[in-house]
Image 1: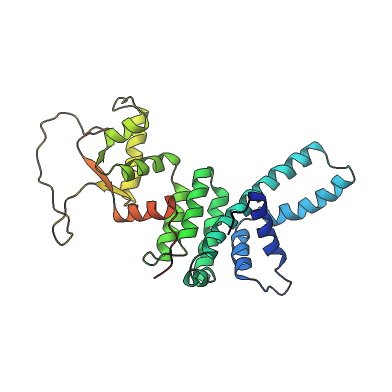
Image 2 (image 1 turned 90 degrees about the vertical axis):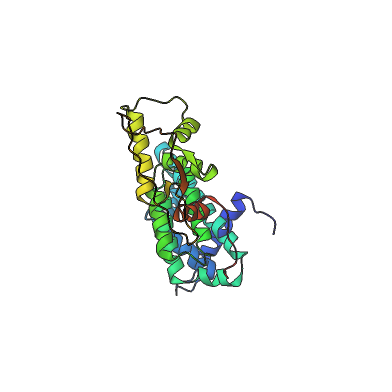
Amino acid sequence: MNKLTKIEAIEKVKNELSKIDGKGKKTRTGRFVVSALSSIPWVGGVIAASSALHAEKEQGKINDLQKIWLEEHHRKIDELYYTIFQIHEALDNAGEEVKERMESKEYLALVRKGFKEWDNAETFEKKEYLRKLLTNASAINLSTDDLIQLFIEWISRYHETHFMVIREIYKNRGITRGQIWDNLNGTIPTENSLEADLFKRLIRDLSIDGIIRQERPTDYAGNFIKKSTRRSKSTTLKSAFDNLEPYELTELGQSFVHYTMEEVVTKIE
């Protein structure tokens, strides 16, 4: 299938909406689209207001403020429709098991939750993480829906700086905190600085949530081996920018990166 332009993709979504009759009969696409739109409260009001404003525009009664309002919300709706199209198009070209998953109440519940957070996302990057997660959530055969809900919450809660740290550890397993800071910022600040406090907070957030950890050796059975305790003779606390302890993603962290930062839809086995 040839790739549609953004305008053609938006029109395709609108066309699916027009097929939904008064009795509530919906195609698979219709159910997906309605689930996505139902979680965004302003959509219905904007569509209704748009029709009214269009009539006023025809009569030359629309003022500059109304025009700006209308144009801005049309832009937001077009962005929303295009995101819906991207997810659905990827899933519609997948296997039959994925198509069946699309119709399940469990998946449609994830769609509603995901698009609610998509609407609240303050950056394009977060919107893309949610798009990829909802796409990949249709084809997961190991992770549970509860885990996908957790991933959605993390995307909502984390700042872009959290994701920058995650990406550095993902790309460079065994990287230290000092190396992460150097890659992202350069000059090392003092230990009692605001920057040091914020950086420690980022590492602590991701460690507490089980996304990253200090590298740990394991035995043949996969059990973590205890580190030998050594008394430090240093009179100062460990640096926020320590260059000794290497970090890695946990299995949970790798799964989070896999389903939110990569395009990985495959047929369910």
